[in-house]
Length: 176
Image (cartoon, rainbow, N blue to C red; front, top):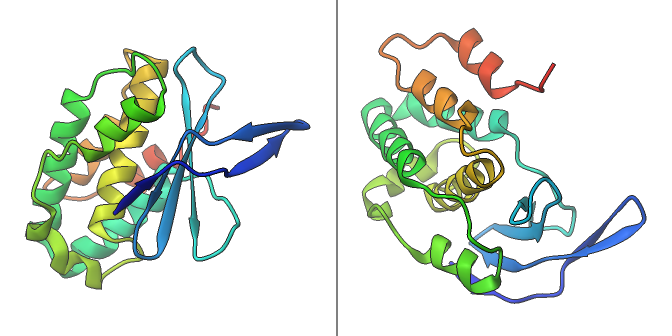
């Protein structure tokens, strides 16, 4: 993983938005932009070997974890449990500066080497998922201290008897 200051931007409603930080991984690049929902809101986007920016949705990483779980159930559950601990411990951003976000990304709570065999399944690497989850958790908690959606999706993935409909329903929630 390489953390950089780069000049990546996109237009939203005719306004150019410049990124705060860039996180390069093997195949994916994560960009963090200033958001608009709160003073310290961040907007997470990523690209895969192209310049097309995508906004990650819960359903994307949930689907990937379900694929990993089919092949490596216990290891994936252990990884998801680590994600749950991160969700529980994460605190809202005090500011959305390069250094604040860099500290969040670099601060490792788990040894990812333990989970590398999961990289053979699904689309995303565990490193990508780990960094993405940290950023999404911080984004959610920065905007709402009482946020719960991310945590509920993780809880659903940790159920002994998976209910795919329930998981997909929670992950695909669109506020309606």
